[in-house]
Image 1 (cartoon, one colour):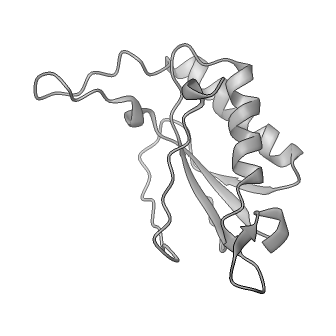
Image 2 (tube, rainbow, N blue to C red; image 1 turned 90 degrees about the vertical axis):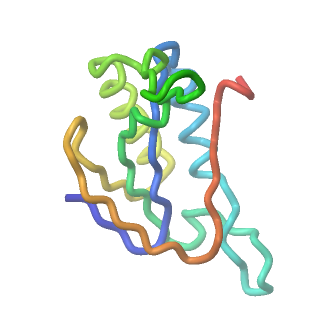
Length: 130
């Protein structure tokens, strides 16, 4: 069971067309986000600067398309074999950035709890940038 103190809870959705290029981009973006306050109160510090960690949880339901009908469609979500491989790659890339990474269990029912320190919730979408 993964658990962290200060850091990011990352709910990672993997799309069917995602590749290693997206893995590298998303890990770099997570590692480099400067959203922690410095001594002057400015959001200027990244995870490594504050000794933060990542709790990485695979979340295929992020690709649930609810635009039509009453049941989400998951056709854009990667198949489990591909999703797990890229999830493991993201974990390795984050660790390669020097971050401590804890994980959930892939394809398992998990009780995820978050104590949010401030109103910061971000969506990182690689498709719009790569």
